[in-house]
Image (cartoon, rainbow, N blue to C red; front, side):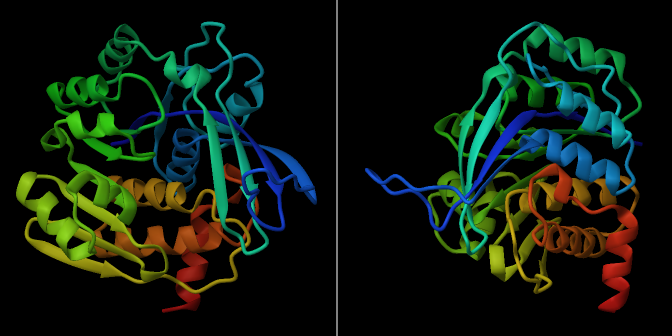
Length: 297
């Protein structure tokens, strides 16, 4: 059926560092690149490269032309994107020699989404089944409520975490995708099984995918709990790993795949992504993921 993604769009300023800068420390970067990023853009690219029909909804800022070009080049529908003349959202990313990253995020244009804009987008698009969003834009609770009222299946990647998420009615979310830290913040529990138990009790109709880094992921839906392990690879940059997983997971559900297939495909796509630098540019296409899985069957 397709996906509408109310997603953030960022310019990622990426610095390769020997280690993360500490308080009072000045370090020289060994390289510097500008990439197209933002959790929303990354997830739209991932879902489109996975084969889904994707409409990206959001606000582009001054200097964000390369973001539109990337979405268009990946066959993402950009006709709903607004451009009200606000500063472009961007991120400053440090990537350590071990492949880990830390990120400073300036929301800019991503916080220019309004309720009237949300209503206009949803009213003009009746075919897509899924509405996907992350916690990097304005009006997240309203998007969830409005999409739910119109009968869409809402997929919420509750990242990055902040206290506002505790006020959202997650019973209106069909799929909640979080990592272990975000799960602990939402539930007050520390172990993966405890986090899932609390969320499933609170929101019995909501499917939950809990990503666990090197331990893979857990998925709880309709009384079932599935575990998907990782595919070991040599990591270069983990920046878009979670977004790749999310985009491929939703696209796989949209294609009618089973939960087992969706989780395995998302995990494989994420594994490929971390072997490459950058955010959106690191996302593999569907044929690469199929070949990767065939080699490991």
